[in-house]
Amino acid sequence: MDIQIEIRVQGAADVLSVKTCEAKEPGPGEIRVRQHAIGVNFVDIYHRSGLYALPSLPIVPGVEGAGIVEAVGDGVTTVNVGDRIVYAGLPLGAYASVRLLPAWRAIRLPESVSFELAAGSMLRGLTVAMLTSRVFPLSGGHTILVHAGAGGLGQYLTRWSKRLGATVIATVGSAEKAEISRNAGADHVIVGRNADYVTEVLALTGGKGADFIVDGVGGEGLVRNFEAIRPFGIVASVGQPAGPIPPVPVAALSGRAAALARPSVIAFISDPEAYARAAASVFHMMTQGVTASIGGTYPLAEAYRAHEDMEAGKTNGSLLLIP
Image (cartoon, rainbow, N blue to C red; front, side):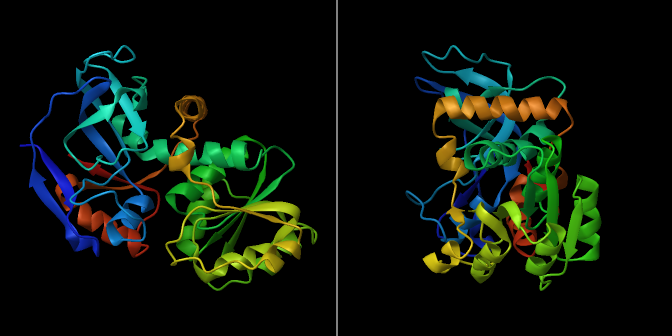
């Protein structure tokens, strides 16, 4: 029996409801995908909770998955029935056993890459590709500060940054998470939710500050990053599990002559050419061993539990739903 997870009203994790569904025939330019693994991301939580607006309700959440092409619509020439594919981006609808998808979203999956690894790596990999190329061209000699270094994005960004030759400073909330971050390749790990990371970053960089800071935590602490960035450095805000971000005063930026970026990977990969180039970078890095870490798997029908665990900070790495 095929099922999908629906949001009928925005709210806590228990608003996610399980509904039976039927496989639909793809229209022109569409394909039907039988999904084998589905990625869980904070953007799904933002859609469910109401932090981000939804186009309509009810709606099936989810922006990432991997599976096999079951059917193709008229005009589709890029993939064939039976192809293994992975995708990320809009439209929503990934939390389902089977779904329709614009054909241009489907990226052929090498046989050497499992559905699980692909579904757990794609959106985060595209995010990292965006951050280290479009937002800040990261390379050897740069120092990057990665907040939440033991999280799914934090580990991935650390591995990717090290492959590019950068020095990585990571922040984590506990000794256990510090070990995870070190295993991902972090050169320096600052431990403790209330640690004075500004002082430590300045000490580690000889008073200069980090060249690039990626903050996937948000909340009121975002502004502190401008005390740890070098002059003319860039702070990228890419998430807010700690809560909404208050207005950032311009004076906070001008003190270090720094820049604030609020990049959206969903917007970035809405351009088919940028999407294809970034996906190629993700697979290239995969061949060098740079992938996500799978932190947990849940039955699709228990999507609510994955959301609860992620929101509570109980998980490390990427989470998957298995139909």
